Amino acid sequence: MSAPVERSASDPGSQGTAGVDPPRERRAAGRPAAHERPAAVALYFGYRALASLVVAAPLSVFVARVVGEYPRGDAILFDPGGLMLRELVRLSALAAAALAVQLGVGALLAAALGLVPLAVLLAALSQGGPLSAQAVGGRAARALGPLALLWGIALAAQVAAAALVLLPGTKLCAELLVLPRNRDLAAIAVAVIALVPVAALGLVHDLARVAVVGEQRGFYMAVSRGFDALRAAPLAAAWAWAYRGALTVVALAGGAWGVHLAGASDGPSVAAAFAAQLAAFAAAAYLRASWLAAAFRLLDRAAPTHERDEHTVPDDGAG
Image (cartoon, rainbow, N blue to C red; front, top):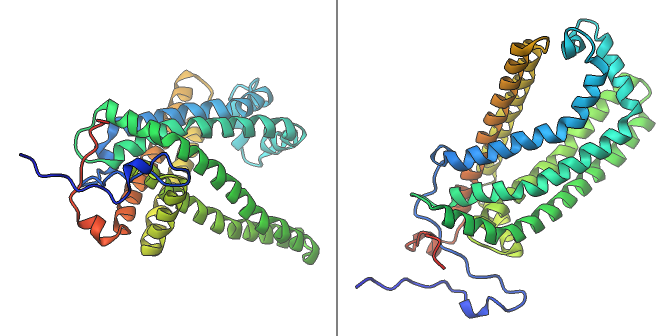
């Protein structure tokens, strides 16, 4: 006869009550690393690679119209002196409004649809041991609503935080500095400062996403758990996020350099450039999954003592 399982402190009968967060599902006994969930990481990478190609299509078509008739293709943009690159920038400024609308709408749509593979990845990372497609799909589906709400509010908060720094900062740079070089350097410094609150909000957003999927939290409790995890280990969280982010930038820059080295003058070089870009996307997707796996451990560390010590019940998709 099996021992009875201790129930959560939340009353299941209160799930339908307005404003009451549904009962949290128990943590798994061990959190898997990113390399232990290759199928989920591959799905996430596949979507991001496809979405990147689709979103960048208008810009690619524009560049092809400018340099497509040259025998060396876009390799001419990287010639010494940068003559064609400057010409491309000049023409881009004329079409900036149309390109911005297409790229912006495409990026927003891709990010919204990307919540589905992200939820699947988080569901796969939330439980140790073998998982069934039914268990992962059910957990991911239940989290889509709170994930969408989190994404919308976090995006608005990040835009507002960046604007609060960029607008007065760039205005002060234009008014106080005379030399164009000094204005440019000051504008870069303002942009770097604006990234700090944006990155902090993104970090809390990820921790809250982990709580939504891993613990089946609602919006308010997920945000609270995200802040709790950040307060419990701020340096560990910042380091785990920052070094993976830096490696992602290096990977994407390496992919861009690989595209430049391969060129686009013939079929094999185009294939090599495409492979370099895909390799960069794959590295970025794996680093993202690795950070989310670390976020689960950060969330576990911030759990109350009685929740950390209690036995856990794996989610097998039943019910």
